[in-house]
Length: 102
Image 1: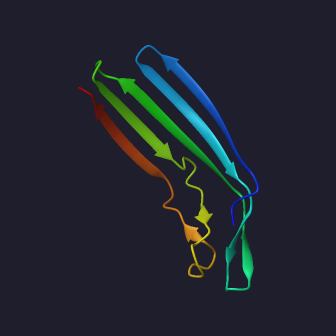
Image 2: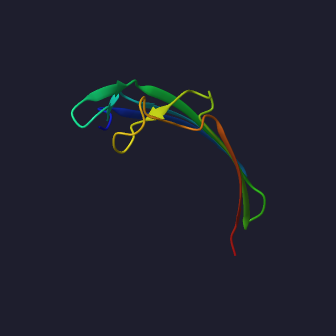
């Protein structure tokens, strides 16, 4: 079952070739199947994301993105009746990106 509420707030700063943002996402309580007739509750979760972007040249952009900045223990409902307590997310994730356009 999907959350009854999902909220997101984003702070964005841009200056010349740089941009930075910080996002806060909150997802309300959800339910998952314990069996074909029983459901259990997954608590609401809050996550922080951040991204730094730099335009190196007109054709090349660099990005550093961090998901789950606070390394929160977040779980999602499983599809079916497989994972008790929900499916755990990976924790904090770092991604470095290079975009080249021509």
